[in-house]
Length: 126
Image (cartoon, rainbow, N blue to C red; front, top):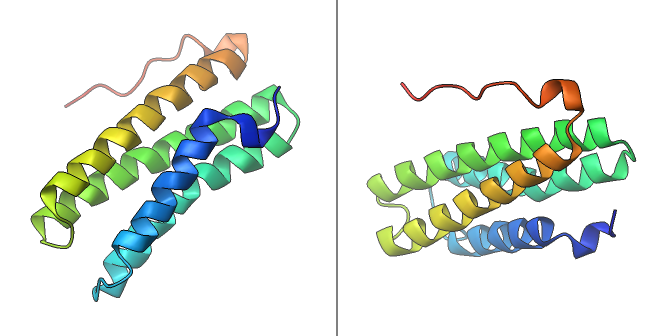
């Protein structure tokens, strides 16, 4: 594997996290701000933690956690827009970036996931 700092998905998720911290720095709803920044920070943090475990199985597990945090973040961005905390155009841009990061994570999961786990189905959309 390359160095952690060379992983595009890690770099992009770090940038998105920083952008959200800056965007929400003046948000007076501290619960919302805390929840969004935590989920955003969780993405690159879990990528890094899994990477440093030096095991493909562990890396895959932490990539899945990071991917889950991406879904959580997208949900919070939609809610933040509807609640008036985030400008719609900016939120949609960040949602698109989080979705792309999710796709990148899924590609890495497929690459590092143990063979016996690769046939699992994803949750259906209901």
